[in-house]
Length: 115
Image (cartoon, rainbow, N blue to C red; front, side, top):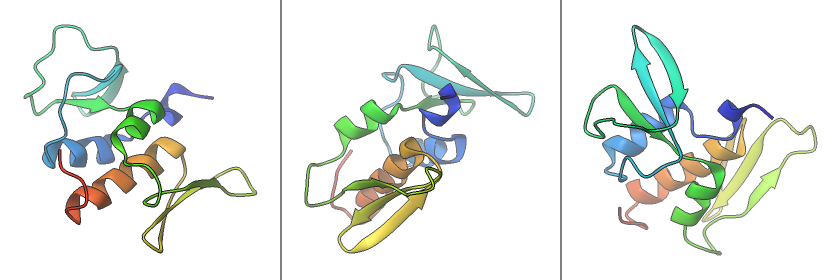
């Protein structure tokens, strides 16, 4: 499995940062350099920079999410998409990391989780 599939996407990482999710404590970061996205381990980086975003792993996102009854990750039969049930709604993404990131975004936006 590719590392890119095990961390939140750039788009979702940006949204999490906008919502105030603490940056700089994840195992990986994404930085935008000359229009290219580079996935790296954080070293001396400015977590307030507009060019750096925490790329949260599946495990890191899982630790941020509340326990049942809010979510239940389900891998589809074709092995391509992950679905998460949130209060009767389904959130689907291509990777488990993105499904969990989108779930966290949903809960923050609904006021069910605070950052």
